[in-house]
Image 1 (spheres, rainbow, N blue to C red):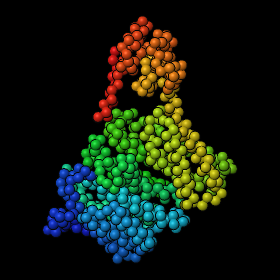
Image 2 (image 1 turned 90 degrees about the vertical axis):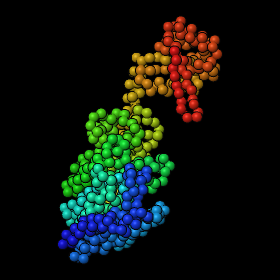
Image 3 (image 1 turned 120 degrees about the vertical axis):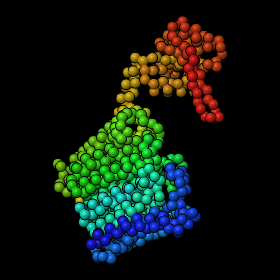
Image 4 (image 1 turned 135 degrees about the vertical axis):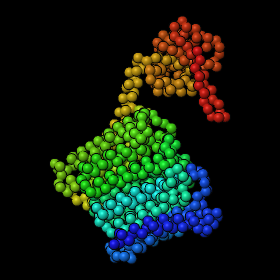
Length: 609
C-alpha cells in the first residue's frame, strides 16, 4: 500500500507546474524573479520560468508523505531525513533562483542537508569506521547534488537521467534488496520528475519551464540518498554492492568530472556555467539537442542495466566481463567527447556517427583491452606468488572481491590522468610519471576499499604491494613498446629515406631537425655551422661536420640527398659557395626561411629553391 500511495507524486507534480504556468502569480514571478534569460549556459533563445523545481519537490514530498501515512515500515526515519535534507536544498535553490546566492552559501546548504539526512539515520555501512562512513556519506551526497546541478544544462537532460536512475533503484528495491524505503523513495522521485518532463522536454518546441536550482539540487541529493540506502547502507560485501550507485549515476559523474577538469585547466571556477558539458560537445559534434539527450539517456540506461546484472548474478567472473565492457564504453565515450573539443579525430574510424562515438576508436579500444589483461595478470600473479597453491576458500573470496575493484579504480585513475588520450609514440618522463601515480593511487584506494569492507583474515596484504610493482612494469612496458616500435620503424624508414644535411645549427636548424624526425622517410645526417665550438661534436644526436668553408668535405662525408640552408641572411659570398658546392656534387640545395610575427604570435615557415 505504501508503494501504491507514492504514485500520487506524478499528478501532484504535473498539476502544480500546470497551475503555476497559468496563474497570475506565475506571470508576476516570471516578470520579476523566477525566470532564466538566454545566456551562455544553454541554447535557449527565450526567457523561461524556473519554477519547475516547485512541482518536482511537491510531487516528491507528496509521494513520501502519502506512503508514510498509509503504512509503517522499516526506515521511515531515514526516509523522512532524506526528505528533510531535500527540503533544505529546495528552499536554498529557490532563493538562489531568485537572488543568485554566493557559491559558499550554496555549498553550506548542501553540507547542512547531507548532515541532516545522516543524523536522521542514513548511513554508510560498508565501512567499519564511523568517521570514515560519515565523511564518505557527506562527500557522496554533496557531490551528487552538484553533479545534477551542473547537469541541468539542456532541456530534458537532468530530468531524463534522474527518471532512469530512479527507475533502476526501484527495480533493485524489488528484485535484490527488497527494501520498502527504497521503493517508496525511488518511485516518488521518478514519478515527480516524470510529471515535470512534458513541460521541459518538448522536441521541436522550446521548454515551457526549467527546473532551476530548486529542482536540480533536489534530484541530485535524493538520488545520492538512494545510492547510500540501496547499496552502501547494506552490510554486505560484493563488488555489485560497491559499484551499483556508481554505474547507475555514471553519466552525471562522468560529465561532472569532465567539466571540472576542463574548467580547472582553463582557470575558471567550477561552478561557473558554460557550454563545455558532454551534451554541448555532442551538439557541436553534429547531433541535435534532442538526439544528444536521447543518446546520453540510452547510455545511462545501458550502464544501469549492467549494474543490475552484477547484483542479480553475483558472480565475480561475470562482473569482470561487465567491468571490461563498461569501461570500454566509458573510455571510448569520454575520449570521443575530448576529441570533439579538440577537433582532433586522428585514428577515429570513418563511418556511422554512433559507431565512431562509442566503439571504434581503435587505439583507445586496444589500450583498454590490453590494460584489462595486464592488470588482471599482475594481480593474479601477485596472488599466486604469495599464497600456497590457489589459496584457501576465504583467500579466493577476497581475491574475487579485490580484482574487480583493482580494475575499476585503475581504469578511473588512468582516465583522470589522461592515459587514454596520449599518443604514446611521443611518450616520455611525464607519461611514465602518470603511470606510476595512477597505479599507486588506484592500488591505495582499492586496498582501502577492500580493507574497509572485508576482513582480510589470512589474505596477505603484500599482494597489493607486489601487484602495484608488477602493474607499473607491465603497463609501462606495453605503453612504451609503442614508442620503441615507432622508433624502430622510423629508423628502418630513415635508412631508405631521404638524407638531409642542414646548414645552420641555430634555433631554426634545431627546430627543423625535430620536425624532420617526426616526418616519415626523412633523416638528418649532419649539420654544417660556423661556430667552432660545435665542430666535431653532436647536436641533438646529429654530427656537426664543420663550417660553411668545409661544405664540400661535409657533402662528401654525409652523402646527403638534399641540403637545407637555414641561414638565408648570411653573407652572399658564403651562400654562393654553398650553392656552388651543391651544384658540383649534384645535390639539390634549398633555403628555409622562418619568420616570426610577434603581434599575432604566428610563426611562418617557407622553403625556397
